[in-house]
Length: 235
Image 1 (spheres, helix red, strand yellow):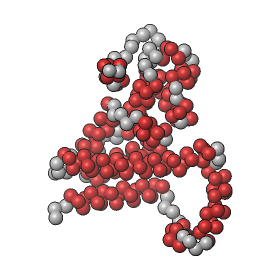
Image 2 (cartoon, helix red, strand yellow):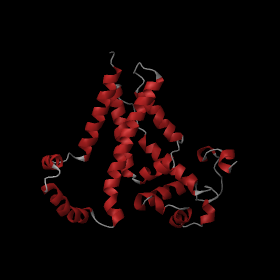
Image 3 (spheres, rainbow, N blue to C red):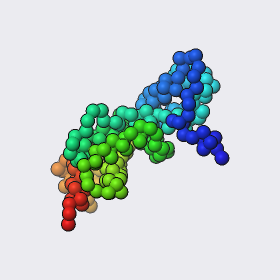
Image 4 (cartoon, rainbow, N blue to C red):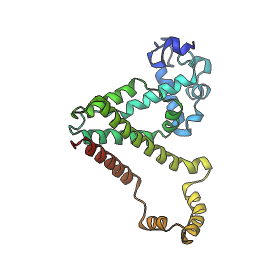
């Protein structure tokens, strides 16, 4: 049996109290700053220690392994997802507010897309987000299983949209190009394909223009919630 199974998840472990300015909170903040600037792969105990001007071994007093650090980072970002103040009374408006907040946070911390895929763990703030989302549906007179299904559908939509948005935005940087350089490289080739007549429907769509990212998110979320509302009506 591994030590994690014996001691429980990192959020439940008592913090070590020492007379030092180095704290778990400071370590997590430094790790998030590294991830925001350079991506999740740049985060390591040694790198974070360097950012804090500390020895790597001193960090292990507070965080036993990098996976624990990832869990703490995710939960710290989870606090940003929580909507402050009262939610709207209408369930659709409330869910829309929560969905926008989650999308904005994922966009602000694009490495979360990678982390969610690597470490699908739920900490205290993740549970608070779930509790708030369930509160948004409190006025719906349906069984709890239906509420869970609604939240899962909305969460799948928001995360899927965020993943696509982050990948499209981050691709040029990972390829070593600017977005303008990539467009300049690809546009002549794409134009040749469009002009060939092989893609008439794509040509029509490109001719009309692609809606902005925010417009797409708002419209797709509205379509999803329209479908949910229609499914909840008595037949």
